[in-house]
Length: 117
Image 1 (cartoon, rainbow, N blue to C red):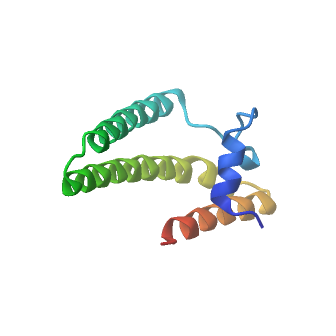
Image 2 (image 1 turned 120 degrees about the horizontal axis):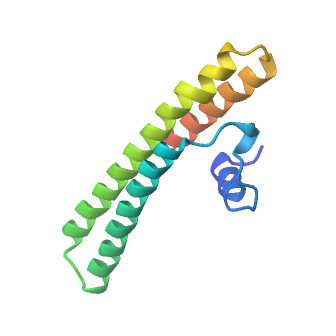
C-alpha cells in the first residue's frame, strides 16, 4: 500500500481535480476561507524565509515556525470537521457498505499519518 501522504500529494498535483474515492470537494464558502488561511500562512512562511536570510535569532525563528504549524493544524482541523460532517456522514447513512468502509479507512489512514512522529 502506498504511503498516504505520497498518494495524496501525487493525486492533488495531477490534472484530475476530483478527490480520491470520488468524495466532494469543499463548498465555495469553505474553499474561500481555506484559501485565505493558506495565503496568510504562505505569507508567514515568506516572512520566516526573510528572517533566515537576515540571520534572525534562532528562538524567534522557532516561534514563527510554531505559529505556522499551529495555523496549519487549524486549517487541517477545519477540513477534517467539514469532511466528517459531509462525506463521512453521507457514506455512513448510505446503502453501500464498500463506500462506508472506504471512507472509514480514509479517516483511519489520515489519523495514523497525523500521529506519526
